[in-house]
Amino acid sequence: MQNYNFDEFIDRSGTGALKTDSLKERYGRTDLIGLWVADMDFRTGDFITDALIKRCQEGIFGYSIPSENYADSIINWVKNRHGWEIQKEWLSYIPGIVKGIAFCIMKYTVPGDKIIIQSPVYHPFRLVPQMHHRQVVNNPLIEENGKYRMDLKGLRNVIDKNCKILLLCNPQNPIGITWDKATLTELSEICSENNILVVSDEIHSDMGIFGHKHLPFASVSPEAANNSITFMAPSKTFNIAGIVSSYAIISNREIRKSFYDYLHASELDEGSIFAYTATEAAYSKGLDWMLQMLAYIENNILFVDNYLKKNIPAIKAFIPEASFLVWLDCRALRLNHSELLSLFVNKAHLALNDGEMFGPGGEGFMRMNIGCPRSVISRALEQLKDAVASSYRNRE
Image (cartoon, rainbow, N blue to C red; front, side, top):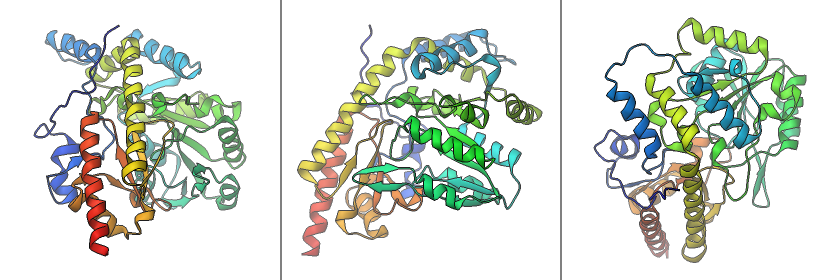
């Protein structure tokens, strides 16, 4: 088995990387350690780059179709990793999961219809419906005893006849929750009873850590399977977001035909040569790389948690069950929103996502991307410790 080096530092500045080359535009300065946008700073596995190089060396980049191995690689991966047996006809390429969410909204709703989200949650869940002139109905998660859970009673109360879609983040981003079967089953029952289509974003499905396993929404019950559209991708797992390799899984024949016909009408179901090649390589040859990456991520999370407890106890890390994103509770610092942002950006020189962007319930939180070499995290935490200490001194 090949051992991969996740301690390697790769300077991405000047490469067009969003994480580094948009800092001035988004944060107002460039001297920041980028721990925000959800891609990793690990070198993509050579099994993927080798497959892409081989494809390039053929020298012809004409119209392409996916091979039989492309679909088989997805089917086998989903079965082996998540225990969900899917069929080839259930699958379709999509040009990105956020785009897929937008397509669902355009296909199944009209302006003025309501889309249900559960904040704090991935911000496009709120922004995409709003930009398409749909109403966003928020049913916030409940935080209690250091854990989050869905407010299923509250969900029943916010539903009316204008609610058409519920956007499910599974596993949940930014907190990193792997939803359990009882929760997903009851959610399915509520949505089925009220004719609300569940669109499940499962892009972090392969990122289960510390013994937690992902449960695909559509696999929990016949009701869930018959009333949902699932989106997955190898992009988060294998750090290939720029290749755009997402796909949809729909078991219900009527929903599948209507949605895939919608995609096909605009050729939105046609992927690039590189999307098909990278996906097949990742799912066929990437298991060892993924397992080593997840072990490294676990140790990074424990490093952050231990460092904060010892050196910055006013900031608490929620330990994710899936993902390389850590939800930081900064409420004990007693800073308002602008003060908290200034602490991280202008004093600690760190670029994180602020919690308020994820909606109600995100106030006083920051989201930290720890998908990078531990040396980078160590330096970032040292800078944060000094910034917090300086902030307290200035208040005295």
